Image (cartoon, rainbow, N blue to C red; front, side):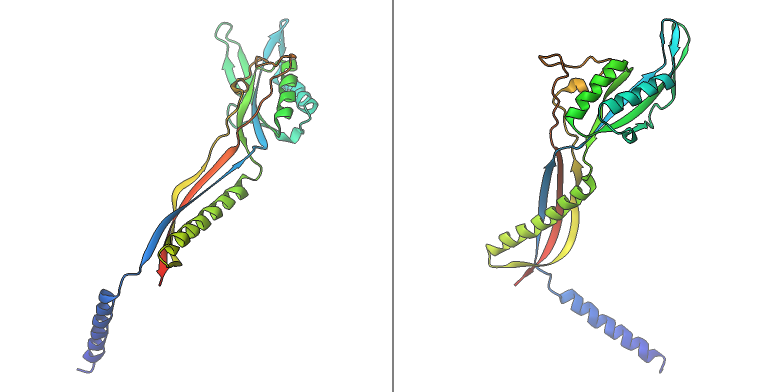
Length: 236
């Protein structure tokens, strides 16, 4: 009989707690979505460059020979060689010329540039050495990670501000934040290029300006967009 007493007490305590929970009033809440965006000018312009073995006057011009010219062209454009790397895609790719059945080696590179002016100089130099193919691969910003964090913080602050001014209209204010959830994934757009011919530069065939130089190129800003859902208690 003594052994049953603690069990009875626990059952009674559980019944009391359940009764309390069943009658506990729901908290008054407000649900809002905060949004934030930021635009930044790209400061990293990535160029893809493709070299391919070729024959000139019955003499094969190897990838190694062209690579040496490419390094000179990059330097002449005012770009550090450390910004030139072999691309993971199509690197050392072997291509067959169907008429002669010759196997011609191709090699792809990625080069990081910083400004449209630097890019124009690069294309001028690439035209001189008659590269197989080149064009703009993508653009980005050197501080994109830290900037996306800033936009996230802006979004959650915007949610708090929205809750504050909405509740102020009825003489209330937000309390603790109960839930924080991404409403939409962080969105970073690809900056558009004003002169699309730079996307697919082949053998120097891109737009020229009135004085015979490469046309000016400009980029739209990169747009970082983010929204976040928050649920706040209402303080009475």
